[in-house]
Image 1: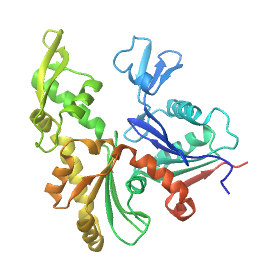
Image 2: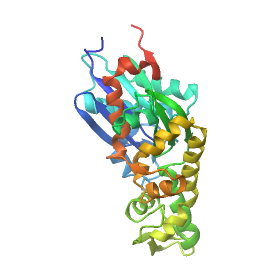
Image 3: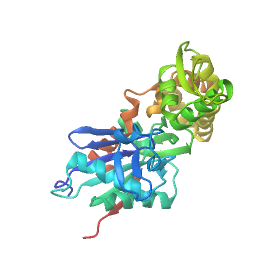
Image 4: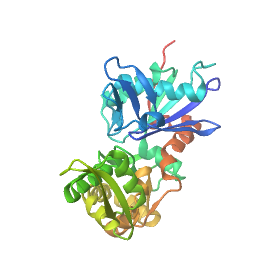
Length: 339
């Protein structure tokens, strides 16, 4: 039925877009950033090239993230970004329009779902469907969610963290919060500003998060951080430690841990027993925050571990879902092109 066109899976993330093509795997991994000419709205750069412009653009150019908290914040720019990426990986003209599957946070409104589906149709899909991120993440992490047994996935992206319990191919219990990788960066920026009177940008905060940050205090490293002194307005360098980042990240990390506990409390006892046995799987780029798995294990009493290549799990999962489309259709939101 769908043999003529390519099957395309898209992880339309707040921080990164990943595209998976059936039979080829992940063919694109680019930042969700678009650079625009401020007055005309003309797109000047997309992806990695646009990200390099963040915080460094002249007055007539603005580098923007069209997705916020896992959903479309700027529809037109998102549509243009999606078309740009799809053209890159499949060519501007399709022999047959592709079937496209896009991941969404577990808890989004009907309007937000419709916006994602319509964006996919407008850039050339003949058939668009949505899959909840925790379900895609579980598939991509190699979990067999088709059986009547409980699995728990904590998918920490750029804009949202989705915590879900899955069984029999679907989501049994879930909660989505708008606290994830971007909030980690913001927390680090606020801490450095408050404690060191130093103004740093998003990219510096992200570098700190990757290089020395920890959620549990089991890391002991330091790095030099450059920014602008709020007192003098001049460049300044400070030395920041892992211990400081733990303090900086306490609020967003606690929110994620509390969400995990809440979902566990709402889960049927039989499935909770399965989760105790199998553990909690962390996926998404935010799962790479040092010590987060240790903290969740300590706070819940359930072993937590980071999936292999966690940042790719959702995109891989869309590919698996497309391969199993007929058996998974009941768990998808679908929009078809009327010809």
